[in-house]
Image (cartoon, rainbow, N blue to C red; front, side, top):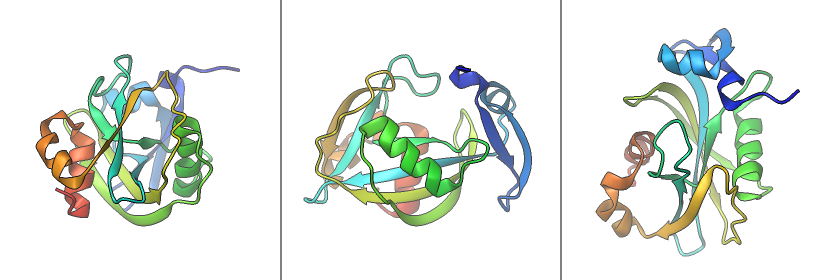
Length: 164
């Protein structure tokens, strides 16, 4: 049975990342409940960062720049499984990401317990056209210049990692 993104069941957690509930995405976002997500910072072999321009149809931060791979952890998924699944879904990359750390991200639209991963990949980036409008590769200096075009959660992840 096909479900919409808003119906997918997310994992609601407390500040120590203990599961407290499983609820539909729409309800989790509406109530700004703390829930699990992943974010993968994608580098190319030159040390530049691969970003996505989020689809104009996305419910959060449409048209903004974000990490090339990110998404929710759904019921029955681990953080690592979600990271691998999102890399495959968004960039068609089958890769084992490196875990960097975990952070609570409080952005204006939602609160997440985010596991941050890293990959290095030189493409090609066969990206999901329904979720991503384009792939952009920027140097660290260019990211600092484009900072205001980044989604709030990407800004927070980059600050957490000392990228900006």
